[in-house]
Length: 135
Image: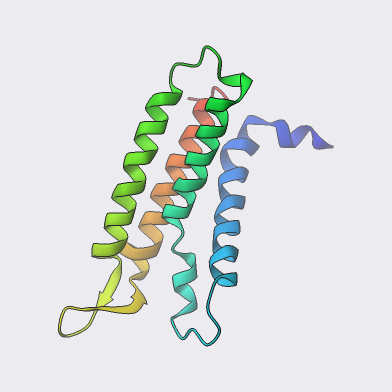
């Protein structure tokens, strides 16, 4: 029964998706009481996914399984760079602006939530695929 958990495709597809949902739930639970910002903002978890991928890479680097694996430092540097790009994108392009050009408390659906989440999910899935030798 548990053999499907060890499947490479489960590691590539299910693990990042489950962690995306964990990130969404963490954002929902982290809301202050009386927070009036839209609930759709809770789905903007791209940077959180990259940080989870970073944790996975660091865990793989420090585990005994990483001996002889030469690609991990490149993934580590790439994901760190992606985290900074994701944070910059979130601060500068993700928010709906008011008539004075100031950000509101509403995320832009396509540019602020969907594109970053899909891009960060793809990075995490690519790392997982590389780790289980699908790439």
